[in-house]
Structure formats: structure tokens, C-alpha cells
Image (cartoon, rainbow, N blue to C red; front, side):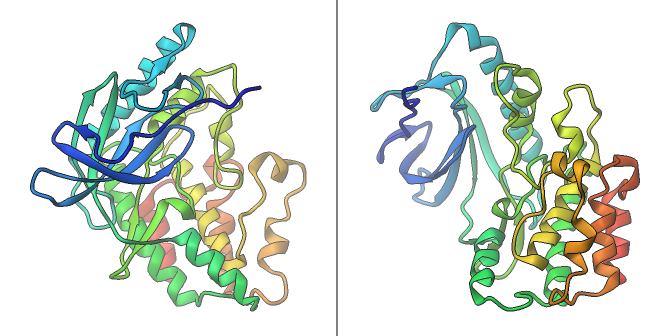
Length: 295
């Protein structure tokens, strides 16, 4: 099978009033660029570009969508645009700020504040290299996630779900603030509506109900992912994905193994968040915040 051609926009491309500087990252559903606005200020721009539905040759601006996938492409496009509209209404230091969003070149662009720092995944990988029993103190873990939960509480209050919480989508800024980035609403819509491919979720962090097309999602879905992130900080690697946990669940044994050395309270919170049955988890962020504050 030939590789799908999805060329990112080259440096100096003008999109609206923004000039592309360079590509920052890309995934299966979009590309993020560093850009400058008309005043020369740095911004990050996320472009809707689902690899399963479109191609783009070098030098082109608009994606080329396969005719039989056009309806799915437009469905994801609408969800991506609505995500931008919703995020633009949220102003909280723990949630990435959407400054502008617009349609152009048959796609959608979200313009966000450019944050400098490293992801929680970067810190976990560094901690893993230390080869100690634990890389993060319990107070550090609780402090990081109290900040994250403050932002997630606001997101849920606006009737949104993140749907892609994982260490790679939690940015720790250079001034030590935790920020939720890279929301996954468009990704989830396409996963639910695209029978020709396997759902594209990050193993270990997606709640089991996300793999079912007819299951109601809610705050408890994001809370499962929060539990998986807590687990990752504690053990230095992701938990088993939900399907494997249904067959044989090593979660409790892993959390209590010799050398992890975290409090029973914190390990109980992780197990609570990661209950396979959604009704067995905290049903709101407030509920989880209260439990974490007691650690």
C-alpha cells in the first residue's frame, strides 16, 4: 500500500492574516503550525486534515477529498469548527485559548495562543530514564492534576468533553502551569461514523465506552483518561488498554507493586477513575477534585 501524501503547509504560506513559520506537530486528524499574526506575534494554528479521508500534494493549499468520503470529511469539519467556537468562549489558564477560527481552502483553522513548554509525556519519558522507584512525588502528581481538573471542570461546564486526554495533550508550560491542549471532538465523531477503519484512540487512555458506537459519553469518559494519566505518572508507562483489561485486569497489582510506594488513597483514586463500568467512576470533576484534595 502506498503511503498517503499529506504535505503540510510550507513556511511563509499566508493563511488568512497569519503567516506560517513551521510545522510543530501532526497526527491522524490534523497538523499544528507555528505562525505569526499581522502584528508579528507568535500563535499556534491547528489545521483540520484527517489522513484517512484526504490527501494533499506539496505546494497545494486545499486537501483533496475522496468522493466516497466527502460526507464524512464534512462531518468532521463541522465538528472541528464547532469545537473551535466552543473553545473560543472559554478563558481559563488551564485550557488552551482559541483566539480565532475560520474556514479557508476547504478546511478549518483554529488559531491558539502559542505556549512554550514540554508535555507531561516528555516529563514521564525523562523520569523513566532515571530508573528509580518513582520519578514524581505524590505532592507533585496531586498538584499537577488539581490544575488540570480546574480546567476540565470549566470545559465540562460549557457542555464539552475533551475526549483525548493523555500525557501528550497535557502541556507543562515554562512557568510551571498545566494546560489541556488538542481536544478530540472531531476525532471522536469520525471514529464513531467511520466503519471502514479501526477507531484511532491512544491505547490505555481511551475509556471502554469510546470503542462502542452507541454508548453515551460523559464527564466520566474524560475522568477515565485522567486516571490513566495519574497511573502513567506513578508507574512511568501507560496502563493496559481497556479491551485487555476486560480479559485480565492487572491494574490493582501494578499500582500496589513493590517500589511504587504511593499512598493507598492515591492508588484508590486511580482505580476509581479507571473502573471499566462508567457508573463506577466519579461522575463529575468536582467529585474527583474533592477526593484528590484529601490526598
